[in-house]
Every structure is written in C-alpha cells, then in structure tokens.
Length: 337
Picture (cartoon, rainbow, N blue to C red):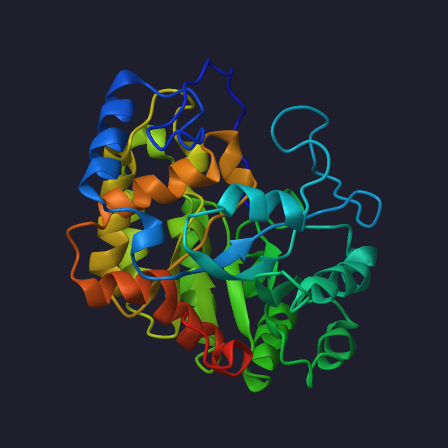
C-alpha cells in the first residue's frame, strides 16, 4: 500500500452498465472505451472467477492506522460489507485480507480482526496476509502461534517509510525472520518503492526457500511512464524464481480523472513478459485504488488490457496463480475458483 499524493476530484459520470460502474472523473475517451468493452461482452463477471489477493479492510473502532488521512477516499472505516457492495457483479469469488500497517502493538488485534472475517457467513475472504516485523526480537514467538492456522497464508511489512530506509530488509535479523517464514511455508509480500527494487532481488537471493510476492508491480509511477530503471529492476527481480508479481496498486498512481487502460498496459505487459504467465497474480488494493479509480473501473480496465491474452493466461492471472502461490487449495475446498 504505497499511497499516492491525493489530487483534486473531478465530476464523474454514470458507467455504461447503468450502475455507476465507471464513476470517478471519467473522460470521454474512457467512456467510449468502457462502452465498447461492455458491448463486446468482455466483462469480469463473464470470464474466469477472480481471487482478489489484496483486499484491505479496517474498522477504526478495532484498529489504529497511524498513516490514515482524515479526509479523502481513505478516511473513515472500510468494512467487508462495503467491499462486497462495490465488488457486486465483478466475478470476485474469493479474497485474501492484506495487512494495513497498523501500529506494531496492534498486530495481534489485526490478526484477530482478519481471521474473524475469514470464512464468516457471506464473506468471500478465505485467508489473510498478516502484518509483522521480521526483525523484531519477538517475531518468532508471534508468527509461530499461527503455525496451525491454515487461513494465515503470509506476512507483510510495508518498506516505504522513514523507519525502513533502503537496505532495511537486508539486515541479518530481517533475513532470519524471512527465512523462518519459508520454513513455515508462508509467503512474504514485498512492498517497497521502485528505487528500492534491488533490495527485493537481494532478499530473494538471501532466502531461496521463501516464496515472495512483489506488490504493485514494484510501485512504478504511472504518470511518469515505465522508466528504463524500473524495467531493468523488474527484470532482475523476475529472474528469481521464488518471486511472483502482483498486478495491483498501479492505478493509484495514475492521474485522477485523466487516465485510461492504455496508461497501465505497458507496466502490466512488461511484468507479464518478465515474470511469465505462471508468476503474475491479481490484487485489487481496495480501497487504496479508490484514490483514483473505483474497484469496478480498475477491474474493467484490467479486463480490457488482458482481453487478447490466451484464456489459460487470464485464468492464471485472475485465480490459478493465486491458489498455487499462496497455497489456497485446502481453503477453497473445490470451489469454482
């Protein structure tokens, strides 16, 4: 969750589905493209079921988020019922909770909050990526308490604050914590700024028995276009076979009210080429995506970008790779996803 600088909102218009699907600051070009997509029948709800591997939730009566703004799209609560309402008709069948960078003393409370929602009646959430500090002296005690908890599928610490400068995740204590996750067969999601991507490469090399997911395509800036430095860094990380890439988050750095699917496509296609079709997976990054795009707008844009991909590659992106990489088969119990 690498937050973009908020920009001013612009008036939106109702989407072609008649349900306000493409709402936030839509340009005429976006409206025409979305209308053509709907007319062609290429919609998420008519294609492969989607496993959303990056669903944030928070209830401020339960959790404290020091970074949370007091105004704008992210302010206030963002609960499961809000997500379910926004995801209606998109074909999202299962989700994974993604930690929300709570204060460290609340990691256990956050874990309880997430696990309460996994498998609850009417909930699409089946598992969680919890928050934690791999270099903390009590990290082993914290994480091993979930050893028999099948719904815990991984862990993340965001690495883009002043407290985690470049190289932070390469310290011996941090590497030891990440190796422990590998022994527990848990995934570590890497979320760091694009200039720090070489840290991801080095961490993957230092922990060859741990599986990693690189969040948000390595956090490039969509408004600046795919820089050569980002491309080279992505290629280097992708050569580590224990790393997959999450197609998520990038819409949050697009220009609000003035973006289109074509702005995102070069980043997605480069990640596809670098990691291959077996190591890319979808995440919504909701509600952070709403800084720029509604959940429906983001999913619709991605569906447009991948419409020409082979069917099996779309299935891998939207569901199969998530099931395999995060080890979800037992949780799904034979569901359609």
